[in-house]
Image (cartoon, rainbow, N blue to C red; front, side, top):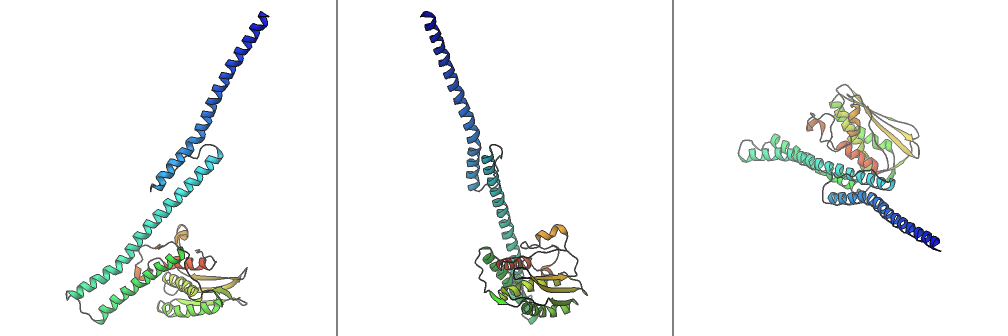
Length: 295
């Protein structure tokens, strides 16, 4: 019938236009969602390429869906770690160059003075040059040891040993220097101390570095106390305590950093180059232990 035919035609027209509108809306929605999803991914890819080319300052926005946000946060954390590592590498290279240049300049100056006849090759001059060479050799050896520890190539000869014996030898070796500085040094050992797995030479080096550091920061008439006691899980706790000036709270997290010295004005003759505590930390951690400082 004509009315039914017109109704069917109208319904078909409405359905057609509705379908076209729904399709257009669907395309728009898909495009919007895709753009929202792909834009941060494209930004992340672009930042990754620039990061790979050496621009470590790259960071991306963390807005968007949770998955994209987590990925952006991970990228930013990675970029920050790389940038921090690069800054540390540059500082380390500059510090190494500075520390090596000082004894080399001294040796060069003395040799040129000897060559020009300004100094005579007497015992005092040769002894001064020898001290600079020993200082240079010790610095190179310390850097080699740190490189091995960082690369996981440090070989340890672990055997069950008595910490009391190690500490006794280290304290006695330090006593002469302590007496020269009018510093009292003592050792206290708790009873029932178990044998511990350690590399005798490396732990002696750790204790020696700690004692030397304590002695350098203890005034005349002060005291350095070494103690050891049993700790849980078959471990032992060694404490090296001095009566020095203490460490500012903001400096404590930095004392184990390479070439770091709490008192920058302290000369190398009295304060070292700032590697002793770093080496101690690396060696203790290589033994599966932990080391910390408090004031």
